[in-house]
Length: 150
Image (tube, rainbow, N blue to C red; front, side, top):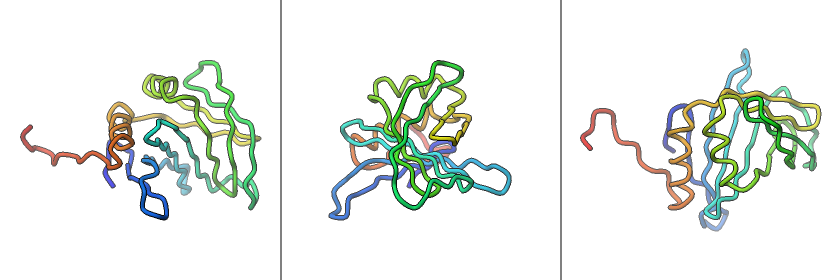
């Protein structure tokens, strides 16, 4: 696992050991509660956004729900989500559309069913290239130690 700004990046594998996708996670805090925002990207550039919020209770069985994503105050995108327990997983539009929206936005607002979450997007200018490199190679790029010569 490597850290890029506030994001933690890891490579994920299937049960047989084959590379599956790369996953970035950023913890946010609401009082004592920790809310996790995640972004995964596969080698074929399929992206998923995930939110784990202890205040959410969707039920024990996976359900498909409609939702929206809005970047800053721009028009929301309609998305499909799978929800279960405290977690919502959103299938994102094609990566060439998502990437610039993530880089340009300061605030991400997500709505799934009656649940809403807002996140201040920080450090994506360094984290997204690392995620893309990881998805292309199957391993997170190594961070150079502070003060090392280039």
